[in-house]
Image (cartoon, rainbow, N blue to C red; front, side, top):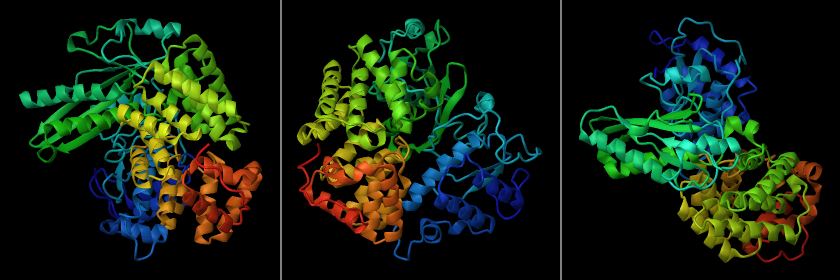
Length: 599
């Protein structure tokens, strides 16, 4: 990439005026969905770079200039800049895949620093800059920006495959398509009958074919590494019981009678001690929906560790819940008759958390469970649907009873009986036990879920939340942080967990930042967390804004605050600390004794 200073540098770099116009275009686009603080972040780093001060763009200076931190700011203790930079990268990716799909000037913030890079879209050096907000049937996304920034060639989907061959591409597209669901064994999926099963709606799964990774370098070492990475990827994809993984031998390439929904392709290139691995996920219609490059110094990590680490990154990026395989087609597919679509309905509902979406997903899963009582994943997701009625009643307007929780637990137990190693089933059992006040059973199930698939970001995040709320804050917060670093979804859900982590260790400033990065409209309890933090900080005016929102949008929560807090925070001292913040914020809290443990 070509870095830009105040003026045009090199034949392909934009001018300062062009960059300033592009910045304005991004900030005023409805597809750039970040709050004001993130907008200031982008504006600050772009302006400083154009002024020739890119070397001063460190976490400390950004924290002071954008976030108002003082001279005591410690980037190790307060991750505000790093977290906001990650969100900014993902939102820029979203913009360039939607409203900015035809924009001439590309602004990226490469991973590993905060200085932006400006460039002219390849092939458009003489083209006119597109008008603000221009979009030509933009592609829906849900970004995976875990590597070195956005692609040089971020483009519309009709150019994606052709541009894959460009030598310096970093990340073609993030987010897309559908969740791949249910359980099947590794190499025993019948690839050739797969199309017929999906056509009849009898198979609640979807299939991903892993093609052998190719070696672009000469020699046995590169060939051995490519084979090793292929094997490692398959091994790490298999625990995701939401998919059927098929290994495609080279002799079978191009011989399938019906194409699977997805194909994972890739290759390796060895140059000295540096290994570059490329990976791309191709949809049945030939569109590349995700691609990435990974560079590793094998002298530092060694061959086996390098293979394992690369495979873990690729498998997680491809198969994690709410990730690359979920976004685009979920809305159109979810809710149709077959079991696979019913599970997509669940993920679609959890992303928007509305009453209507909940009812659609619940009805679909109930019908699927009647048709396929032998499928562990269907029982697991049906358990989670009932659990949500119990733990999110103020958002879903439900009136849960003890029978609601009992039903959720019965489905979770059935799911585990059907497949004792299904991480999603164990996750459901963990939550059912936690809210049933069976803390030992909850953490045992959570440990089993995490052991079954540590690369499942939702499992890691939910297990981390249960550990934290049971009082094991250090270990739990570590897992929640890990889930966020891997772009766990739904968007803004686990950030509220990190807010609680910071709050309980006494870092209320970081707690407020995390809380404001959560999705405050997802669930009124997220507003309650921010209210307690603001009360503790003595920010009465800002606390009143949150209290007014709760009184208007969720008045039924107020008389039940103590009980709702006790459902989630196990230890009395944690409950009282949280409630003290609410009282300081002006929320009336009854003096009745909180129930023991989560209910």
